[in-house]
Length: 213
Image (cartoon, rainbow, N blue to C red; front, top):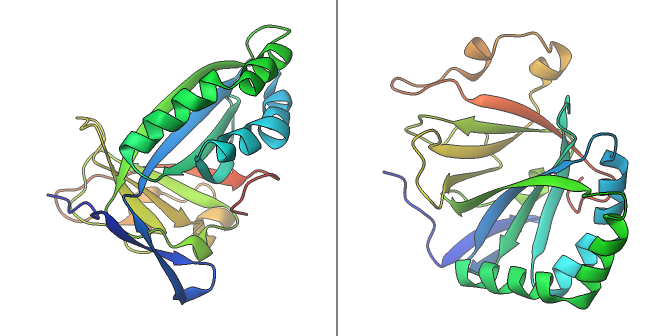
């Protein structure tokens, strides 16, 4: 049984442990946006010029944005944080009701829908988010079975809504040996404990507009 971090959650900031902050009722969401074929650069422009300021205006913190490597599905992965689960619902209601958002979507969807689909994964933290490690390429690991928080994780979460196929989500600094040897087997590199399974690993590279780089 995972112990979800309660309302008082420790987040280690850019200045290290001495700059730690207490965040009340923190909740997270991993959102994966899939651009229409051949329009990934347009999606980047939408995020860079419009989406980030609008989301911030309505109380949504975009912790970071990344693209998978490789990226055959034209995806942008965004980690978002909210004051609480209720705040998430309220903020997105405000976003979709904002005339600026409606006008922006009308312009950017002029040649057809720019975003074909969005995968939403609400998350509850089981470890603090170590913000000063959110730089460079990261490994997003999704664990179908896990009994412990993986060593070296920048952060780890469990799905807010239980799923049979997903027990844990974790972020890690990109392993040097995996980056230097893309073909290395994850079986030996990740070494799961008894009763666990090897996670699925996606390498994420920060976008030029990501708050975490």
